[in-house]
Image 1 (cartoon, one colour):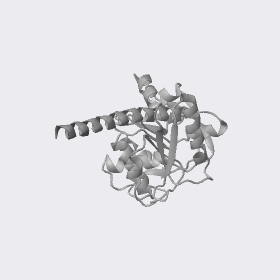
Image 2 (cartoon, rainbow, N blue to C red):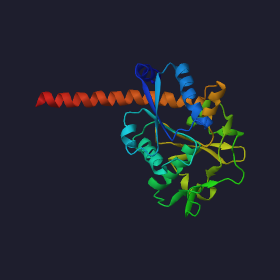
Image 3 (cartoon, rainbow, N blue to C red):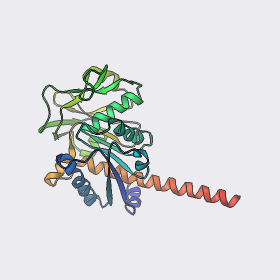
Length: 263
């Protein structure tokens, strides 16, 4: 069934929104276009992307026509509120969503505020005196570090990689605050990747077609010419979104046409 959907989607351009403030000095941001290109070449699925700055006043309008949304690394961004508006759109409109590094962090805060009702949920780097710093600073940063990550069987991460463990790159000094972890991690938000110390490195929404968060930066593999499996999975999920959005559009057009003819 999915093969038929992907074949249908291959006739259309897959549009990906990269939510973040582009900086050429950030390796992950240079890597992302390469990673998408490798995924497109491998799958035969055509893709184009658009940078969506976090301070864009019309951010929701810019996301409507997109088939997948990727909240990208590096921070602090110009508007955390803008990033969270984009994340909320992807979550509520069921658009395929990938959040890596800073995208992971912003998505956790968005979920805490808008799903759990934790209005004071904050990022410790931005609000050091916050009552609920769900994202906190590491004493020993993960900047320019590599480490093993273990994936939960049956998760989208596991399915993407096809193995239980992978070595991944980090450029990170902030993580999920363990003091709030028990309150945060309740269905549908699930832990799907841990490092060897048992710390959270990946999260997913189980009630969403594709909503995957990683603290590591899988896209950086593309700088070495290696296709990141998670980016390939994200592109496939976005291709499915193309098919469903097209079908929904055809149904809407048919309904409007039929109503016009009846009148």
